[in-house]
Amino acid sequence: NAGVTQTPKFRVLKTGQSMTLLCAQDMNHEYMYWYRQDPGMGLRLIHYSVGEGTTAKGEVPDGYNVSRLKKQNFLLGLESAAPSQTSVYFCASSYLFGPRNEQYFGPGTRLTVT
Amino acid sequence: RKEVEQDPGPFNVPEGATVAFNCTYSNSASQSFFWYRQDCRKEPKLLMSVYSSGNEDGRFTAQLNRASQYISLLIRDSKLSDSATYLCVVNEGTYKYIFGTGTRLKVLA
Image: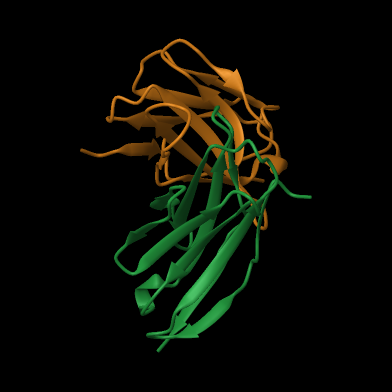
């Protein structure tokens, strides 16, 4: 039981390049999330999904797109990377929203955009 | 006012000490509360959920005070391995989990 996995672990992009981050979970969770974490700030929600085929915007969605074609996978895309997108990206999943519903996180992807 | 506020620390304590962190939240309608532990450059890991009646897990005790809108985490008999950043997380019953910026704990030998 791997929990939540993310690939790649590290990546360096040049401004304007594109990439896709992959998140996979094997806990049969309905809900999945993408966050970014920057120094001195709490985790901020980029996009989330409430089930296969659904996505929705979070707090900081600009410059990112997502897809959830399969229940276990949630992809985060950067179409044209910018230095402001240098961050650590965490994927998370949960069974439900609401009381006593914990999120479980992947190991993160460290992205640097030069 | 931030939605979730934590003292950033660091809290430097000797091994064996008891240390407590508080976290305040602004939305009185918040429904669930959690403490996560985050080691340097790693993912947040769930430490414990916080229940209305308070709950304990070994050396860790969490309390919720809805009237004053804060949650607390007490760590007894601190170990070197407890050194980490502790994140307070509040959920409003929807997709919205609000993360504090964390309290850094250093346990000293």
